[in-house]
Length: 211
Ligand code: B1M
Image (cartoon, rainbow, N blue to C red; front, side, top):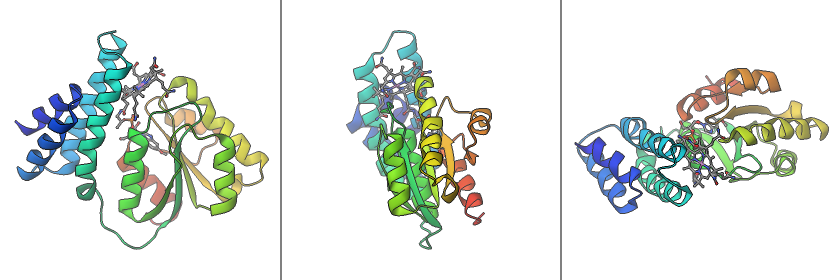
């Protein structure tokens, strides 16, 4: 069964097999979002669970992440809506101290596909970098991703830095990432929260009045 092959290849960190399995699943007519949500993401969740149990280690998480990215790259053209009209400019980045980028990359990909111009600052993005890019690029939105409970605070530090620089009111801020919740987003004064990449696009559209 194709979805199982994708799941197994990512779980074992075999990028070549992951690519072949994703390709086979696409050719079998499975929708890209089903391959992503029912095979790729569950495989990474299982990697995380095994890491927590002490049955997998950081290098194995890393190779699984690479296998996932290889598969996602093949899904990318199928996940995007192909909308060409620009809905606005979005700056995305994983916050300071955090190196996780798979979720952030998915969010960037979906936003791009929905018609936003995306500037991806990468990972470990300092509050100063976010401030600088707002001053220079004047984006409509900032999207901050955090995957560690210890780096969630970097989201509020960045919001404070935007306020201190006098640019907080020039930009809407969306936050997300596994430990981030709507309650956390509300508590720090973010404009939007999204639990996954699909809803990040819906929230972004609503914030620029394009919903
Ligand atoms: Co890390 N890691 N990791 N890791 N890692 C987690 C997050 C962890 C939950 C694993 C575990 O213990 N079960 C745990 C965090 C525990 C905690 O804080 N509560 C953890 C840990 C502890 C660590 C290290 C500290 C391990 C160590 O060194 N001892 C270390 C920290 C490094 C650092 O960042 N400073 C570390 C390192 C790594 C790797 C580098 C090896 C690798 C990352 C590779 C990479 O990203 N290029 C890695 C991985 C792969 C994981 C897991 C297994 C998978 C993450 C992932 O890609 N998920 C993860 C366990 C897990 O999440 N189940 C784990 C798939 C991805 C599609 O989901 O990123 O949640 P996610 O994104 C979703 C949503 O959250 C949302 O949309 C996405 C798609 O639907 N979303 C947004 C994300 N950003 C958004 C932004 C938005 C809106 C929605 O708006 C802007």
